[in-house]
Picture (cartoon, rainbow, N blue to C red):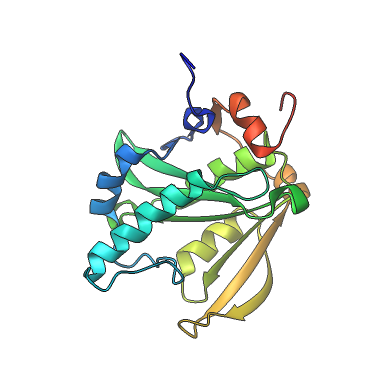
Length: 214
């Protein structure tokens, strides 16, 4: 259809220092080059014996992107954002609704290039997608998790009002994972959404199973 575009690609989130736009295939080469070695990839993803570790990590990143948009449904979705600061790509932020219409709960994950860390950008990234989730998408809760030693990730969660719920052990590594949860009421009582600007959301709402204006 002339003039038609995939509505998800029009979603844009902005904070004081960041610009988040939905990832496109054209972003993949840049993300491949910037992907830090310390970012933990999906341990269940397919890897290939003929590729070295770096090439396999690139494959996991690319196939994760293709899988997210290719298998999209209102019941199970994953929305990847490219994060830019002053026009330069500094990381990626994911927002996911794995059982969306059943429980209206979102999960999130992200990474930043080393030079961008320690500047509060991780908190801005998460706040941006939470503003989208609890605002137009009408989420009831947000969850997240991080290994006990990942102080920056857990620090972002605490700063945004998440509360610790339980711990589990990762089968592939034996590391202890701390799970956290943020209720809609707690988010509404905070100022986490302050300064977040959202554009292009309304045309994409039907893809989340949402009818009517936000």
